[in-house]
View 1 (tube, rainbow, N blue to C red):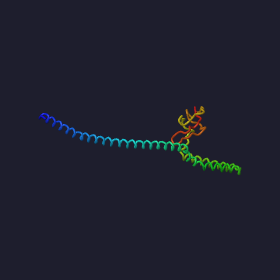
View 2: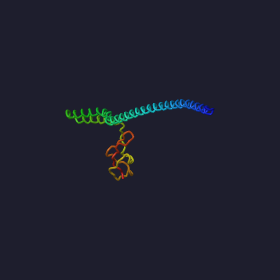
View 3: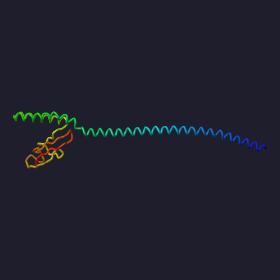
Length: 181
């Protein structure tokens, strides 16, 4: 071998040695990337399973609230019905008593007591009467059924033909009235 060939061989071996040193370096970089990729895959799987659980929880929440809403609509009047049952009981007693006793005065007093009891239950629920007679006509509160010419002025409620009611702050039913024209 000539000196040039020996030098070429030595350079070749040195290059191969560098390449063999690069391979483990590349392998360790690849291993780090693979480990990092595996870590991200694991996190992604965790996030996906959390998302699935949250989705299931939300679906259950939606179904539960829908069921509660249906229950509230179905049994929402239960409280007021319970408060009206004593009124119903008293009406039944009054009817039964009227068959046994023909005393109109005591029947009348009993019906008046039941009427007051009934109004009390409704007032406790927020029912209030709308003042009409003598008031200025208000189309938000009154419904004019009749008009009569008088000297009391224009658009004054002369007579209440049917009571109107508020439920809390909302007009439940306007008063039906006769108005001056």
